Image (cartoon, rainbow, N blue to C red; front, side, top):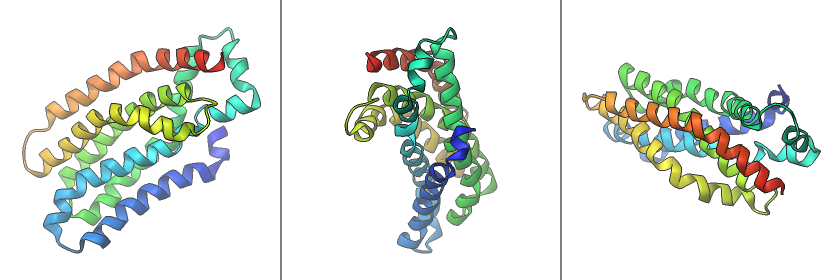
Length: 209
């Protein structure tokens, strides 16, 4: 609810994704074979960068108004509160990208099967981006230039998600099997869901000290 009250933050993420994805067909030209070949990478990279735009605000507002201190001394387990923040971040920054992706994918002449695989890969992959990104946001909390540091911390960890997410779409477009890509994305999601809230909670305690 707090995030939706700041609709400008939500719209910036969505508009960034739309603009980046829409500019590539204009720059590359109307050659459909080229567009179909670059579509998985373009859409996934745009979604990754768009999701990173809001990472700096994940804990910073609570840090500035003192809410974070109250969360730290709350009787509720901190990792559950952090998990709630992660889920909220995905709902307002990741889910809109998932919903817009198949519409934007039409510009690249992707088949219906490829669009379905793209949507499903983003549905599995974008929560991982929020979970991992929250750890970086917690580690750089209150640090000057934290936005740049978050990018440096989380981008290397995002690379496997990018590879397997885009790879699933490429495999679908080529008529190959993509089950292995989804299995690996699902494994990453489960591991991140188990360990990321604990790591982010510990990072918040370190940052507040």
